[in-house]
Length: 195
Ligand SMILES: [Zn+2]
Image (cartoon, rainbow, N blue to C red; front, side):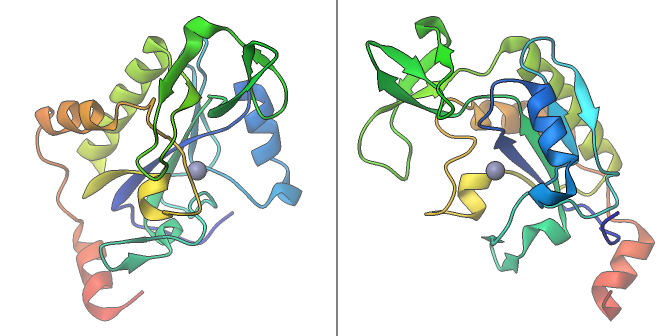
């Protein structure tokens, strides 16, 4: 299990796969060297926890946000079951693993870091509703300063969750839920005197 962590951020990812079970299996394999606190299934909104919220998970990699680097040390990572950026091939959309994605499940949009439009796997309403509930609960429990996309903390290296993900709407709904929990005394002492 990872070292202790006091959560200050939530980082949103997509799995770039086509099933939640596949992503969970991969992240539970120590050889993958990746993990996340939660995985949210696109088909039914099921939330699977892989790592306790007060332990480090390996989801952010090399990363920085407003002077804080190595976001794994202070961020809860949420992986959304989603194929991510798609390829146009033989008149249809495919995931990088070659799985066909129906046109109705594709958003054509240009990533803020790119110049050309591309196809992106649509997030599902049931999945986004589950994420809303998770984010509200996390903000009520922890002093969450910001909800961030992986592409915002690792620009030039990561594209997830990408332009199909409604991050502004998520932030607005989270803020409407009230202020985040204040830092605990223990966390304030840790910030003052080191870890
Ligand atoms: Zn990511």
